[in-house]
Length: 263
Image (cartoon, rainbow, N blue to C red; front, side, top):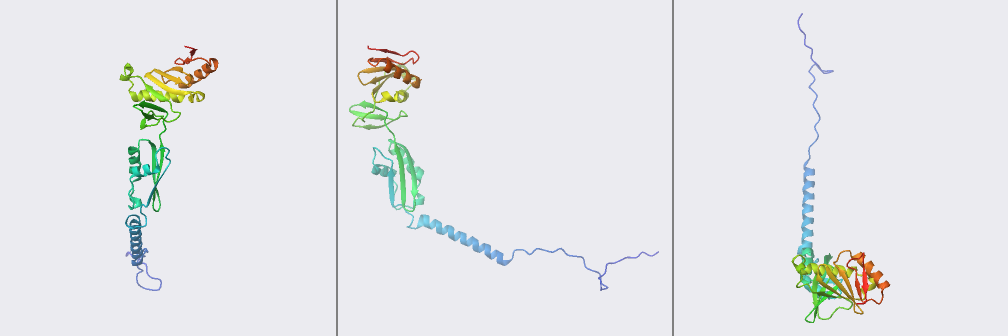
């Protein structure tokens, strides 16, 4: 039997039906490309305008520098140390560099924050170190803060600030504990003095790391020992002052065995 071949034909035609073609999605046309270029150009123009406004125009430039938070220093001294030039673009001011300049130029400052105040100002917010002890020398007074930092020298003794007497020149403890450490220990001891007694504290004497004594009003002295266990020593001193109000000598260097005497 002869082989027969069957061909698919059109419904009403004698020709063969062509194979089906897959539909193609239209690609981005010229209109979409032009829109992208317009958006890119607009973004570039806006960026350029913003950069010009910040750095090239006369609108956003430094016209004023103000300082706040001073106690002993004046705002003018802080503004001078900041050295922010007038007329420069506000955006170009390096605020971190200005803060570092303030702390380096004014040791009395404890903190310094610098902020831009748009459209024309620079604000300086500072806090000053406060003396908790003073060191007398040649008619001048060196101020020591709560961190043991000697930060300034003044000609007039600050009221209510105890005197620090460092008698440690011949102390063997200087090899292990330098003067800066002894100052810090004295500050710690002064801070641990009971609040009720703090107003009577006249001086803190340091002979070595573990030989700290307090001088109170009324020619009273307190052997404090080292700066350790300050809270316990403060409680012991409070108890001694109540138990022996007429005593002149107190010893709380060993707070578990405090002592008081008239001598």
